[in-house]
Amino acid sequence: MTGWHLDDDILRRYVERADSLAEGTSVEQHLLSCEQCRGRVNAAVDVVDLAAVWDRTRDTVEVPRPSVFERLLRVAGLPAHEARLVAVASAFRGVWLVGVAAILAFAALAAAVGHARGMWLFLAVAPIVPCLVVASSYDPWMDPALEPELVTPYPALRLILLRTIAVLALALPAVLFLGLFVPGEAPFAWLLPAVGFVAVVLAASTWVSPLRSAIAVSSVWLGVVWLLAARSGSPDAVLQARAQAGFLALAAGSFGIFLVRRRWLRQLRPGR
Amino acid sequence: MDSRPGDEMLLLAVAERDMGAFRTLYERHAGWLAIRLARRCNDRDLVADAIQDTFVAVWQRPQGFRGDGDIAAWLWGIAIRRLVSRLRTRSSVAAVFEKAEAVPAAEDQVLLSVEYGDIGQALARLSPEMRAVIQAVVLDGLSAREAAQLLHVPVSSVKTRLYRAKAHLRAVLAEGSS
Image (cartoon, rainbow over all chains, first blue to last red; front, side, top):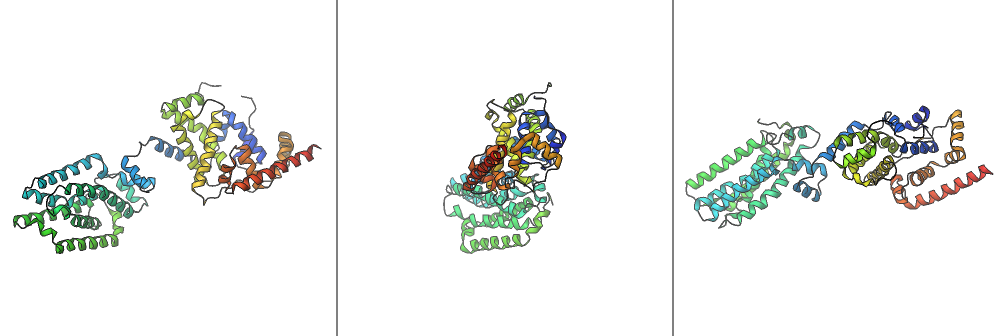
């Protein structure tokens, strides 16, 4: 400490930027080595909301390293905050993924051992898995963090579509892979129905909660499969070109409805 | 002076992931850093971002301070470079060094001449562009390249202006002493 300190006028001129370059430089040189005068300058800060910057700084250093999935999304070119929003969906938590994989593996195994009913089981389960996972990825009940996200100006449509694409990017290859173990022509029969159901869920979620629509769609599908199986028709019924074209139309139509009604997504509320 | 822990102690504690020490360090330094950065960039959001980047960098690498000199000077070195790198990613924002220079009152002139002598007046007679270059390169210790990014001018302009500013100062000071 030299005992020399900035006088109040110089300090005021410095803070208000009303000084000359020489004087400002002298002040800055002094500040580097004088804690006392730094404290006086700190007390006069009005250029930046330091409390807010502190909160952001603390948040930045406290968050754990981004998950593998989030880093993948960033590599894919998504900005950091969007990658975070997409990756926080419940559907990407380990438990969920393991559960979904287990159900699928069970169905595929049943089909692979050649059991006729196993074949049906796979056909019944595989198409509804993607839409259930998609629904859970943006249902406010599954993801309590989503509600504040939806009321922020962030476009809900973009968020939901991003999550849907991310979910499908994860779920589809998994189901495809397991489908390889299913004998017959069935392995890929579920693809178009799956896409159709996802679109239906997206469209229906402009009226009711995503999870409810997914459960409704799944129930209808399971009922249809059950009926077909009970009438001992061939599982190939769903494979026919006409049925597949129907699913394609369903997907296109539902997606159109979803886009038209997208502004209602903001009113998403759990359990409605 | 008092029993509060010095900045070096705080930095050691930060290396041990002590959030309280980190907070204290922030409170001691963020303010004057912000003011000093704001004198070099008119965009307050960018200044806020640069402050945040600076302290995040401190948290991540407190051992970057090697114990030589003042921690304040070390922090400033980080902060000005963070500002430059923020400016680089947002090219639309113009960094402005000087606002319209206030004309010093008579008594301030006297004070200036007492305190800084001829050099202060010599600096005051430089054009704002030259002063900006002098400030960035000579006083803030930036490289010509960093200064060019901060000021949004080509590197070659920084070098030319620096050369001319030095020549000008030399001429003015020689004239004053003769």
